[in-house]
Image 1 (cartoon, helix red, strand yellow):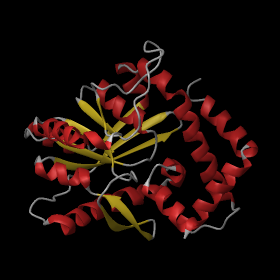
Image 2 (cartoon, rainbow, N blue to C red; image 1 turned 90 degrees about the horizontal axis):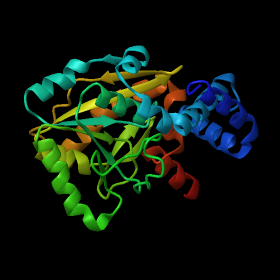
Image 3 (cartoon, rainbow, N blue to C red; image 1 turned 45 degrees about the vertical axis):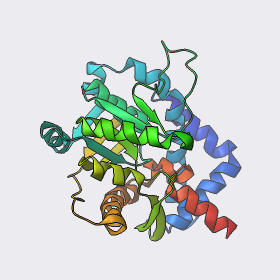
Image 4 (tube, helix red, strand yellow; image 1 turned 30 degrees about the horizontal axis):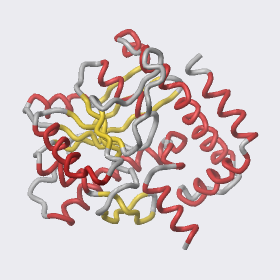
Length: 278
């Protein structure tokens, strides 16, 4: 039922949420350079609505995750890149994007035995039903929503990576003080560089992490670590970002319906806002 509900949700949203559907169609037409109103654009938009439907049920599904669930619904590719870095005693920055369902992906890794900390920019939610619903807790999450605590966040990030643990980070998130312009979906967009700076300070491995959600199955794809050491400041950050966005974009173009970043909070959403206002 958890996998059936999103399809029903997508069907009704597509035909009843006309304003939101139009917004998605315009973004797809602009960023993917497809003709608006085509069958392909329709399928992409319905796919985005389905991802939204999965997000409605994922917090009830995650507490049910166990080893049989992983064997049946999760497939991992390139896991040796992650294991290799951890065996060397290095911390790992899993640099991901808003593609597929992130919470299903990194929680699957936790069930698989990986000690993973989420970096989140949202405000922590109050645990109303902790037994039947998943919550990002302070124990397994670094909430960076309060800028007045930035130094405290930095210390915890550096301590986590320095101790050989994993941090999951949405590399296409729009938030961040310092940014670099890199090509993404045929445009130049501003990507934040703060986490790259901290990862390099901690001598952590920066591993691109792609996760897809298709017909109830989660596909975890790890890429070779990006070698950013020895590069200087902003130019080095830009090169690392370009390596990351090249990999992320290739999957977005191959599975456009999987990119929930179409509605934010991502660099694409920031770019779309500035384009409409400018």
